[in-house]
Amino acid sequence: PMELISMAVVENHFGFKSRQVLTGKSAERFGAVIGGQLDVLMEQPGDVSTYVEGGNLKPILALWPTRFENFPDTKATGQDYGLDWEPLLRFRGMFIKKGTPPEIVDHLAKVFAEAYQSEEHQAFIKRKSLDIVDSFRNREDTTMILEDSLGIYAEASRDLGLPVREGL
Image 1 (tube, one colour):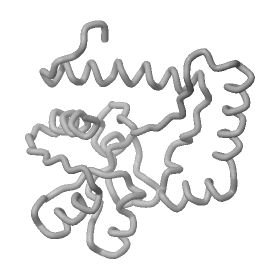
Image 2: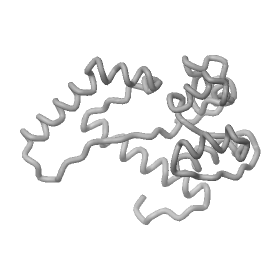
Image 3: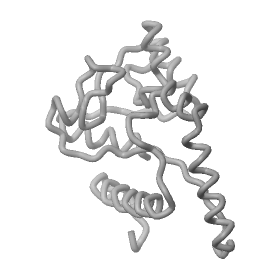
Image 4: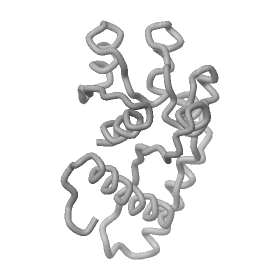
């Protein structure tokens, strides 16, 4: 869904239509483009950087307000083409059962924050080019992101003529 909506925004801005083929595994996606079965791949910069460095893939467009530091020659939808749109981001969160005692919730939040800040994890983030945005969020910010994202997806789905659950 994120890719479908993102591509629909790009199609509307540039005035073209595409046919997307969704696959579940990154090896299938990368192989389909490298092998010539598909023309284009939409992927996170860190996931394709090895293929770009190896000359197997070439970035052609950053769906981002500005150009990426690790791909400075790749034009960005915002900076280079005037697309005023907040890109959809993939995110993950840690959830706990409702009603868990506050001291346990606070302890887990502290432990997860410390783990995120560890040198080992920060090196992983840098290596995978996941440092484009500061991706750590506390509980309040995570709740806000989830609520905002639901609204963005619902609006974009309506614009695409897709069904949206009542109340969204």
